[in-house]
Length: 290
Image (cartoon, rainbow, N blue to C red):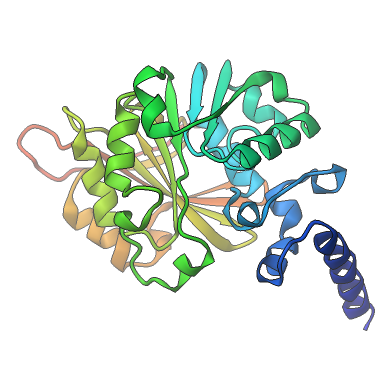
């Protein structure tokens, strides 16, 4: 009874704050996850309705930042906050961040949230269209977390790249390649992995690619795909030469086939694929980096 009473009290407190901000009942369930999304939520974090279900959980955002390395990172669809501007240590790992969004309100909220984390001076906020800005952008890594179409994406059995917004995933990826071949892409957990495979072939020569499942509190939240030099981080890996058969295995078999990594309360299951070697023979190599 005590636990139920405490839970009800939390819900009432959250509902009061949400009501004051005009948050609809549709996203109330996301409020329960508020500290997973942004750990400093109680310090004045502001989200619009879309932000509640589109912001990257903070632990996953940290993971993305750690894999970005040094140099300039271009966040192509920044929204109200996520990687790389919702946690101070995200910025300590890169020299600068360019955060782009078409919606002025989202950019204003992102700037506000960055101030709460004390990292607003690390970011250049731009209100603009990524597709128009891309030819003038230069960075070491491009981070892509385009809109997934709202919570209804979960109802789709096989999420294809053409369902991404505001344009299909193939075009988004091609435009990002005009900035850098080193791309990090955060996608729905039900994404079509065969299509993810195809993305690596849009570059000449084909890019290395690493597929990672991201869990928070045992719940699969999304798939991160690392391309180019962003792939194959310094940790224990199972490397496989690129093969459609391997990608099919990834889709059809249980997730424990991947390499499991733990980072605090966050679990990552990693599948790594390299460019095909000359001759096209399938090879499997296991490397452990201590």
